[in-house]
Structures are given as C-alpha cells and as structure tokens.
Amino acid sequence: TRILLKLLLAALLLVGPFGAQPARAQSVLLQNAPGRRVLSLNGSWNYIIDPYENGFYDYRRMAFDQSKTGKGGYYDNQKPSSAQESELIEYDFDKSPAMQIPGDWNSQDPRLLYYEGTIWFKKSFSLKPQAGQRYFLYFGAINYEAHVYLNGKKLGMHKGGFTPIQYDITGLLSAGGDNFVVVKADNTRHPDAVPTINTDWWNYGGITRDVFIAATPATFITDYKVQLAKNDASKLNGYVQLSGAEKAGQAVTLSIREAGLKQTLKTDADGRATFSLPAKKLKLWSPQSPKLYAVSLSSGADAVQDNIGFRTIETRGQDILLNGKSIYLRGISMHDENPLIPGRARGEGDLRMLLTWAKELGCNYVRLAHYPHNETMLRLADEMGLLVWAEVPVYWTIAWENPATYQNAEAQLADLIAMEKNRASIVVWSVGNETPLGEPRLKFMTSLVRKARSLDDTRLLAAALELHRDGFRVNVDDPLGAELDLTSFNEYAGWYWGGSPSGITQYTFNIKYDKPVVVSEFGGDALAGYHGDAETRWSEEYQESLYRNQIKMLSAIPGLRGMTPWILADFRATRRQHPVYQNGFNRKGLISSTGVKKKAFYVLQDYYRQMAQQYD
Ligand code: GCB
Image (cartoon, rainbow, N blue to C red; front, side):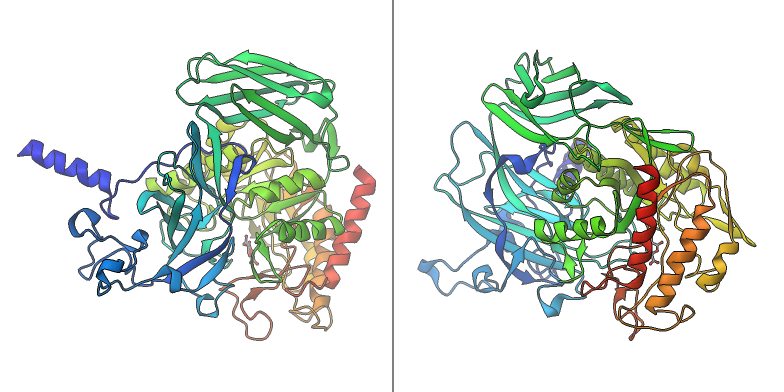
C-alpha cells in the first residue's frame, strides 16, 4: 500500500490542484519572439465573466475532470451537438461579448472597472501546421494568473502579470487548420504574490499585451546575446543557443553587415556557440545618437534579425560613465498606462506618445516603474535614445519569508533579463521599490541583486530605497545599498513630510555610500486646472513650488547624477479616493489624465535644459 500511496501522491502532484489535465511547462522564452511571428491573435476575443469560477469547478467545487464526465470546463468551448439539440450547456463563447486584445478588461466594460476575479477568453483562428515547423503560442502578458488551453488541452499555468508566457504547441494544432485558444485570466490579489495585495496602481486584469503564434524550423535559434563586453567597447561578446534534436555541432553565423563583422562558429554539445569579435568599428549607441545595427544570426534552416545598439555603462566613484563619459540622468518615472484611455497601453502608438512626452520634457532617461514594461517599449527606447531603469514588482511589503514568493520574484527578474538583455537602452536593473528594513527582507533583496548580477554583469544594479529622518537630516543608510551600484531613494519632502514646499530646502542629506546618487522619486499631486498659491495643496502652483524647491534641495548632494521624479502622467490608483482632487487617480503626473501639461512640467524641463548644457 505504501507504493500505492506514493504513486497516488505523485499523480496528484502532476495533476495539480486545477483539473486533471497535465500542465506543460513553459518553454524557454524565444529571444525576439515577435520577430518570429507568423500569425497575430490580437483583435476581438469573446469573454465570459466568471466570479464563481463556474467554468473550472462543479457544484461540489471539484475541478472538472474530462476523463470522468466527458465534459470539462469552459476550455472545451462546447456547443450542443446537432444530433443532440437538447444537450444542456450553460455557456457559449460565440454568443458572449467580445473585447479588444491587447487591452485590460477594466477599461473596456463598465461592469469591470473594479473587477478582481476570473474572466474566460476565447479566440478561434485558422492555422494549418506545416511539417518540420515548430510553433509557439506567445502572450506578452496576462495579469495575474493565467491558465491557457489550446483546442481544449491545457498548456499550462503562469503567475505574474508583466512577463511573457510561451508554450510550445508543435503537434497540438489541428491538421485541418481550425483551432481555438481559451484563457482563464484571474487578477485576484494574494498576500504571497508579486506584487502583493497592496499597491499604488490599478489592478488591471486580462490579456494586456500582444498575442501571436511564432514559428521556427525544427532546429532553431532559441536565444542569443549580442552586447559589448563589460566596460570594454573594443570587444563584442555573446552567445547563440540552439534548440532541437540537431543542435550540437552546428555552424552558426553572426554578421553585422554594415560594420563588416562576421564570424562562423560551431555549437558545442549543448547547442551553444560563444563568440567574441573586435568591436572597434562599431559606432556607439547613446541618447544623442541612438545608432542601431541590423544583426543577423543564422544556423541551418533558421535565421533571425535584430536591431541592436552597443554601449558601455559603468560607475566610477560618484560618476556614471556612458561610453566612458560622465552623464547626468535626466529622467522621469512612468507606468505602463495611457492616461487618455485610461488603461494599460494597448500598442506602439500609446507607448510612442508616452516616450515623446518624456523627450519633450528633456529626458535622456526613463524609469519604467514598477514592473517589466512592454517589449515594444524597450525597442522604442532603443530607437528614440532613452536610457532605461527596468524593474520587477517587488513593491512595498512582500511576503519576505515565503520561499515560493521569492521564487516567483526571481522568476520575474530572470524573465525580464532574459527578454531584454539585448536592449542598449536598459542600463539599470532594479530589484524593487520601497521595501521596509528588516532581516528577512535584506536576505530576500540581496539574493535578488546577486541573481541579477549572475545573469547580467554588464548593467548597473539598483533599488528604490527608503530613507529616515532625524530633524532636518535625511539619512540614506539602508544596508542593501552596499550591494547596489547606484544610491537611489524615494523622497517625498513637501508632500508626505517636511511641511509645505517652501520650507524643504532646510533638509540636508547624509548618504552612507560613495556611489552615484540617482533619486528614484519625489513629487506631489496637482489637479490640472486647479489654481491657488504655493501653499494650496492640490493646486498646480503647489506642485510647481515643490519641484523648484526639490531641485534646489537635491542639487546640494555632491554625488547627484540623476533623478526620475514621480511621475510623467496621472494614473489610476484605487487607493486615491479624494472625491474632488483625486477621484481614483494619483495626480502626481506632470501631465494630466487629459494630456494637459501642468506648471511643474516646465520647471523640470528648464532644469533639464541646464543639466544638458552642463553634461552633454
Ligand atoms: C511611492 C511609490 C509609488 C507611489 C508614490 C505616491 O513612493 O513608489 O508607487 O505611487 O509613492 O504617489 O505615493
């Protein structure tokens, strides 16, 4: 019986708590998956709102088990058969409403503005699989927990609202070409999740980024890294990784035609080829001159192209050196949200608008808070010449002592780095925001920093730290700072503390670390069009004065090498409940939710003009 019990346990573990169909593991993320797209699944998807998870559980709250009843959950996408018109089926995707994907659900159906729970999505599509091809189903992001099914078969489950989800669907597409994909998306907040239950942004649910099918030959390039060596602009280093039965001993060619660079290497037993090329001929990427090269990689039947920029980033004492030259990071923080919808950015146009605003402000740098942003955003930053701070949603008070929470955070960080490691724009990996002091947290955060460094030692590591005050002294001495390359902190003088903005210049900073200081946040709310004097909270004049005095106060820090004030545009935040001034929005934007620039926008723009003159 012990053996029987063990077998039973093993079977249970395989099946998991959600239904009898085995979950397929998510395959390694394809590098540049959009470059492999053969079919877009963006557009109209039917949906069923299912707060009771009726499509998943029967009336005894047991997960449906196809093998026993012949009927499964909504993922079966059933219809009464014509032979049996009396058949009872209590759902019908095709007669249900549809919404646009990519797009959060909150902004597309007034019933869903505050909704947190399960919604089922279905899309039918036609694709006839070709022999010898491999197919991948790819979602840019689904918030937060996603169960994905193709033609009624479960592909897997994924947690985390801001990183891609990919399944190898080779062999699962119907030979006739008629297919359907069903997604159960659940944005319920959980204390052990990443982020946890408390955030200062809207919990947008659904399929928020592009969906497509990518195809490759049977043996194919899964991954590659093509970047300058650490702090060394004379060498191009990287690797190409093949997958598939024939991956060992294959010739792989890397070429950058415009620069006359080409190298052919053989892969090792694991399918990997590691190369190093002289890079002196390459023109370096910078915000002033965001030069991208068409990089071609090929092996056997497979070929992939990517536009990649080359630059070095390092710190020396309190300086940040880009391509060996000291820079000042003229930045702004932003969410992945278009305030004009308002909702998650839905495509390149939305993202371009946000980055164009940042450019108008005089930025050479953006902080993409508080989670991985759209892959398209990073490509735009490369193209438009904006340096980037990229972050994971380790925000406020995470379940520091839960190993599963750590695994989740680390997986999101690893996916972010895996996905974006070829983007010249990204110069900083941030492992979190405003996490409270304490031993379990220090252990958690230190592990994240070390993990990030082990995955990519060519970029700077940071976190938005907290500070503590002692009279007019502001101390920055979080022990995590010792692990980081930049000293960054969120500092709300003139808003959450320190009285009105006019008095804050009395504060001085006592910073423990001899590193570049890049202030990750400061700011205050202003309702666009509401006017008063500099002492009137919520007025544009108050925010204007706050920016003037913040800049004065921070300029006294000798190591100040940049800032990303909070925030480019007003954004939806459930915690912001003042019925007149906030109305469900955090109003710290320099641009309003109708796209109007507030007075403080021009204060920062002015300061950035001066800093550009000083450094560029
Ligand atoms: C912070 C958080 C940010 C909030 C902001 C605020 O420190 O990092 O997510 O939105 O303050 O407005 O309070």
